[in-house]
Image (cartoon, rainbow, N blue to C red; front, top):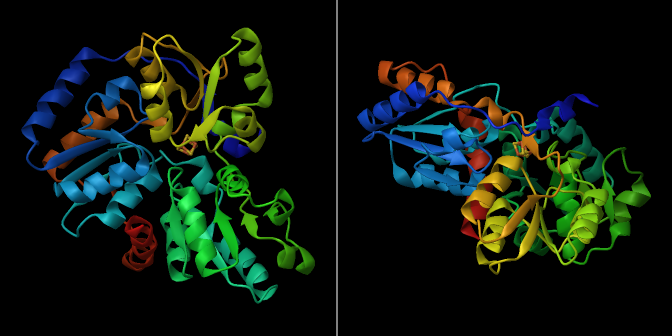
Length: 356
Ligand code: SF4
């Protein structure tokens, strides 16, 4: 197991302390004129119940900017809070209840390494390379793509962003998720022989022949699902439908019936016929929530182990309460502030995406 695979653990539902929940509700009510709480789909139930808006990272950041509340508490991970800060106004403050709540995938693309690879690729071809980063990346990586005529994508709009990039260049450097990049490139009809995963430096000939260069990152949670999980579910439940997140490996995606973002998964399950049977390959908190929400459908995790994202789970009711108390006293201990220059170019890349 490498250091990034520590970011996943089997699903263990947590008990909440009713006294803590009561205090959050009362403090939230006290601060309501100036406060918005955002919750990602992968948060635990006793945290997400306090969210004014729940959704994926993009929807949450957009809402944060639109709602114009002075204090934005982001129950998610670090890059999401950074995104909210990039898109929000100067007088808005963004807080993350646990500063250690990072994302293993975002941590896999370090700006210095990216600059080295970029130099190698751009010096190996006269073709225009457009850098594209998945929103699950650090503010520095968003700055890098903004500064180099690139753009940001989410798992909902990756195909559209590929089109945008190919209209402006003839090659793409996709950061940091190799699997979302691979699945999108395949769905765009790009032959696998023209997709290069950057687990080593490509030679000049390879640079010329490749259309898409994939950074070697991945989500520690979604990478855990295997082709064997898909085959087992199909054997156990003949006729089962399988939907997985676009961060799963290409063999899992190819063997499934559908793939997409968390919002796509929710939409598919919501619109599915009563009585239908589904295996869902994504973070376990969302799978459990779907299961409760649709008792008229059979909803199973794709893997019995039901993986949860460890860093998302660092956000607990206790830490949410603590952050609300800090807001009341004016403390900035959990405030996320992106450096103004980084913010400037990162915002350009985000606005390019939002304009689409
Ligand atoms: S689920 Fe994966 S991509 Fe999302 S925060 Fe966790 S490690 Fe990052």
